[in-house]
Amino acid sequence: MLYRAEDLSLSDTFSSELVQIPVVYQEGTCVRSLESYGGLHQHEFRKIRRSALNTLKVQPGLAQLFRPVHIAFIPAEETLSNILELYRTNQRCAVSERKRFDEVPHLKTSTYTLGIVSHFKRDLFTRHPLTGKITRHRHPYTALPKFTLPIHPCIAVSTASYLISLCSDAPPISQNLLAIVRLHALDVFWADIFIKFQPVVNILITLALPYTIFALVTLLIFNGC
Image (cartoon, rainbow, N blue to C red; front, side, top):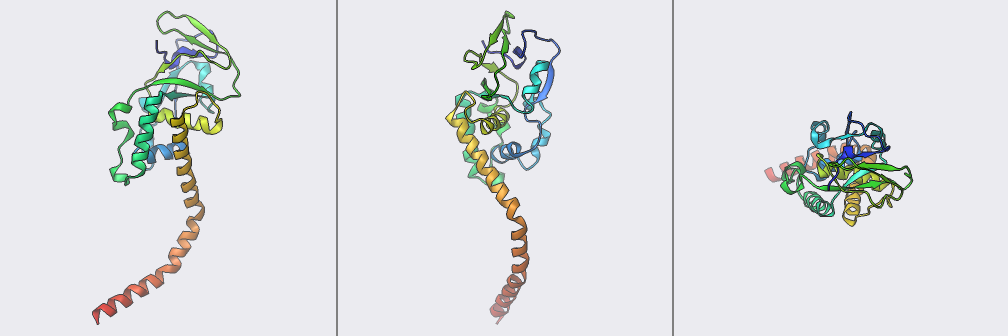
């Protein structure tokens, strides 16, 4: 039986009044990587951020664990493998040729496991979706169920990647997820390099411009002769 996000709680009391939260709640390196590898243009995620693809309904007390990130839903291994394949393919393509993550049919749904930072020790509670039976889960949470969620797996991966970058031993560990984290880290590295050295590049371009113009004029005169 697959559980819903609302079937997870910090107490054995479950409310019928749920809280809507964004999975990715602010722009940053995770969003930049999602746009880059997920086939979106820069800042295009802003259109998706408030959509159902990025929204979960959770118990009121649980919302605090998503911001800052203490827990994250991690897609199934097969889904992670497919996401990694998409990201690597898009990495080798021009922006205009990249596939959008939200237009890939086999990436629209997934089952999920719950990743938890290692320093989190509080009890968690789950509620069976059909019977309503409540189960307590103590650290290290070895018997948590799998979940079904309305969000997009690629968006879930963005938060899961951030969780792993904060706490590399956060279970469950997936080699595919770690590979996605490394892709994100590479994207961040080159973005930081560009930002750091952009003023220098601009100066070099400015200094080189007169020489470039001179060379072009000389070439035109030479060809004219």
